[in-house]
Picture 1 (cartoon, rainbow, N blue to C red):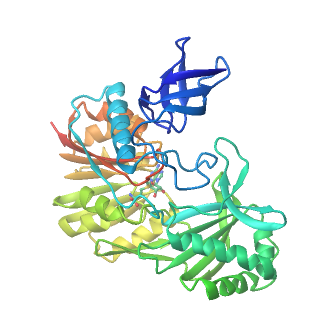
Picture 2 (cartoon, protein in one colour; picture 1 turned 90 degrees about the vertical axis):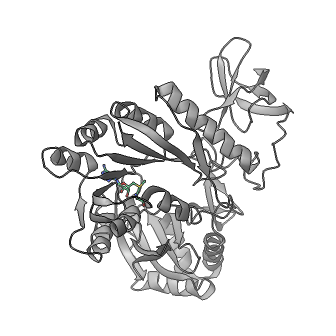
Picture 3 (cartoon, rainbow, N blue to C red; picture 1 turned 90 degrees about the horizontal axis):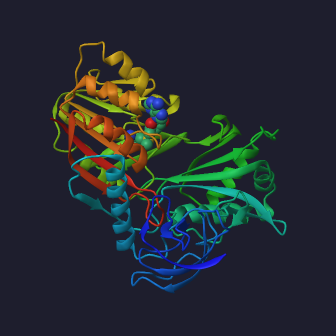
Length: 433
Ligand SMILES: C[S@@+](CC[C@H](N)C(=O)[O-])C[C@H]1O[C@@H](n2cnc3c(N)ncnc32)[C@H](O)[C@@H]1O
């Protein structure tokens, strides 16, 4: 049923919240706080469709991408960039307050270039009128949405996607590999000088000898930055995959803040090629002491910088490939530093019964957060300083409610690693009371 509502505030996930005449709550996409809009929603449903903006906010703009609204990737292209950041700050503050996080300091925000920032994209592959296309999913569905551009991706990633599609029109190897693949991932370094490609295939393809290498060599003609590529076979969503083909260099050297990181093909690295330069010093600089722990360490983004000013760094990472990169990376800095391939929880359960006590603990978990048990163990370890880096404000708030028993929030920073989308990165500096 169509109805006119006033948007009260933005909520995490990209929607705006309004109350309907019945008193029921409606979540409306692609709106801004205080806008008067016409919505449509079946009675009983909270998710509403935006029909029309009657009174637009002064900061509403024309979304630059033609796929905005249909594509599941971006939620905020209709807002000026400064407004996006303001919205995220409000959502962060409110999420903390609702969860019961006390005495929140002013949230500092850090922003960078809001377009062309992603160093990694994963496109779906599909066919339209007999030709291969790359795309994403239609918002809220699993339907394939072919796209003609992705303005949040680094230009090199889009150039590579176009070159691959063009190749598939007359190169038999490319055609066969794209038939076999469901998705293609491109990952480049910050200065766009090197590129990795991964084709994701559900089943191993009985390939002619060297056919993948021939595809990569042909692609490299048009994209000389392509330095390596692989085929990841198996159930990518279920995590049961392995590389069945490889060509060129097996990973990417990624330079940030005078450090060289090695990211093996398929490994995690922060996705914003501009802002990681700000994130790194925010977390690490100005800290020193005997022992620092870097939990959920990835390939050692923070560990390597912490090793400049701490006598001993222990880095914990569960993913075997990242843990291997981390071991080699830290090993080069001296035998006093160590990497542990384990889950953080497993590591902390062991650590509380040992004598070692760090001066600083950095933790940067995936969206699920560290979890209540890990936070209870952190309380027992009683490090004087903890830096919590989070990509999900709801799990961050849950964990801070536990940590605030012994810690006060000294600083809280919003680092906008994901412009145009609802995702937000937070860095919280905790000081033991
Ligand atoms: C958000 S990333 C952060 C990585 C790193 N700090 C960085 O900034 O590049 C989270 C990392 O935690 C790892 N991870 C996921 N679950 C884990 C767990 N239970 N224990 C330890 N590491 C885990 C992932 O493999 C990933 O490398």
